[in-house]
Image (cartoon, rainbow, N blue to C red; front, top):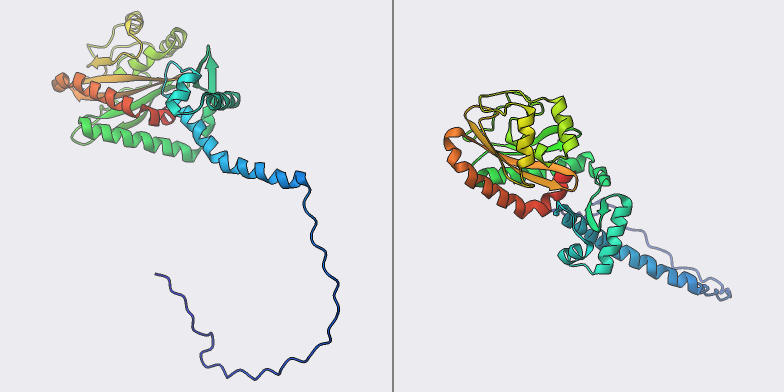
Length: 301
C-alpha cells in the first residue's frame, strides 16, 4: 500500500525567526465591483440540450448495437417491428436508429426487411479484428471440449474458401490439409456447405476457377454431378461428407448465412467413429444457434 511521507524536508532546520507585527496601512476607499451581467436567455438555455445530448449519447450507441446484433441474427432479414420487439425498443426509436444505420451503410433495407450492410467492414481495424478472432476461437474451443471433436470455422470471402479458425487437441486432431482447401471445395463438407449458400452465378464462377477433380474413390465425379447435389440441398441444410477429401475421415458442416456473408462451422471424425457424426453435428448446431446473436458481428465482418 502506498504511503505518504509527512516528515519535513530538512529534519534539523533552524528555528524560525520571529515575524514583526504588520504595520497599519491607511484605509482606501474602493468602489463596489459591478456584478457580472446575467447571460442572455438564449445562452442560458443552450447548455441544457447539450448536457442532455451528452448524457444520452452512450445509450443511443447501445441501442444501435443491440439492433445490429438482432439484425445479424436473422439470415433472411427482419422487419422493424420484430427488431423493436426483440431489442425492447419503442417502435419510433427503432425506426429512427434503423434509418440512421441504413444511411451510414451499416444496414441495408430490402422489401421492408433489414440486413447487415457493407459498411460494417469499417469495423475491421486490427484491434477489433483480433477481438473477433478471439471471440470465435474461444467459442470453438468450448465446443471442441464439450462435443469432443475438432471444430472448424470457415467463410466464403472475395471469391475464396477460407478456413479462418480450427480448434483441435492431440487426442482429436484436425484433418491434415494435404490438398489446398481453397482449390478442393467440391470434396470436403466445408466447401460444399459454402458453395451451397452461393447464388448460381457465383458458384459456377468458383468451379470454373477450381474444377472438380478426384481426390479419393469417394469424391464426386464431375462438376455436373456436384451442381446437381448442391441444387438438391435445402437452404441451411446440414452437409455431410464421407471420405471424399481424405480417406478415413468423415465431416459435417453447418451453414451460417448472415446477410450476404456465407460461413460455416464444421466438425470431423475418424471414419470408424462415423456413427457419432449425426449426434455431434446436431449438438454443434444447437450450440451455434444459442450463441449466434453474440457471435454475429464476429462472423459477418
